[in-house]
Image 1 (cartoon, rainbow over the protein chains, first blue to last red):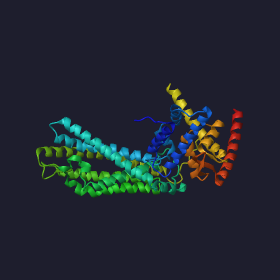
Image 2 (cartoon, rainbow over the protein chains, first blue to last red):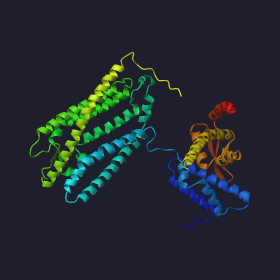
Image 3 (cartoon, chains in turn yellow, orange):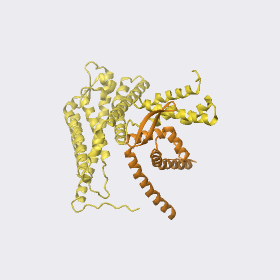
Image 4 (tube, each protein chain N blue to C red):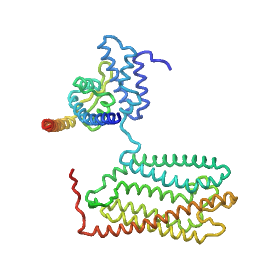
Length: 352
Length: 115
């Protein structure tokens, strides 16, 4: 790389480097011209003071004081966010839910066992493949979610939502009550929305759940019966969040809405587990069946492992809901008793 | 050691917060007379308020987009320079800001005397 021949060339090189980092807007040239003039004015003043032209080192000193081109461009450019502070909590929540509560469990319970069974002779390869695919899936999911939120950030949707809220519709203050914030509800709504989209895409895109095993695994007959109720619960979850957001004064609704959702899920799981128990036999493939073209012993083994994993997951969820639903019912009943008219607690006055 | 770094950081953040509003006021006040970026920086530095290029130019652009300043590119000393001055709305806002500053300053002086 050639060294600059004179002080003016150093300034030009510096401005070119700043230009590289500045966004290509109409104001880019404006910003550079102004910065260039400032630097040249500094040079001229120094030259007047010293009564001689500046050396390259002295010019370099002025530029060093001004700062590294990338940093200077960052200061001069308009402040921009990929995802701004108002959307960031929802983004972080959705990212966490999708990555930790959808993708990782799908890999642990479905894709991992399927890959392990396919490559049962080489466990190391199977684990490496699963981890590699998990890594790619996490990256793709994180990238897609980030992209969606970046688009949302640039749309006016959040600004409109911010303008629409009405202080008179805020729920009354209650003492010793765990409040569900609007942000939490928006997070839930976003998550449920993505979950519904995922569910709707599944029939045509089985790789969304089976991953590389989608080539020889197909959804079992049980899903044909229970797919619509599951989609209905997911749609209900969205409706529940929308009602909670639209009617924040219905302070009783979030608890009841959540209770109903869990109760519906419990009922569906009960019927699914019953259907599974009836389908027991020599060829037990209630959740996942093997494609006609791939009936090898290994495929059968994969299918058996995946079916067992789903059954375990389902039974675990059923047990969890069996505990949660009575507790939620009891909490809701207690809340109804305490929240009767005339028993409203006054707003707490905080005195330091 | 960590505590001392943290307290320096806290002080630095508070100092920047305190400085931000004061700089806006100082810039608006200086631009009652038309100036270009470098002379404005120099005028502020001569009064003891150093401000770097990366802070001043975005501030000038923000104030201009808010309608408080007007700017014009003009040739002076064989170079194009961008001259800034207060707009009529800027003059009005500056008047209000100075009144507010006076109120804050009076209150703060009283509070500090009590301490």
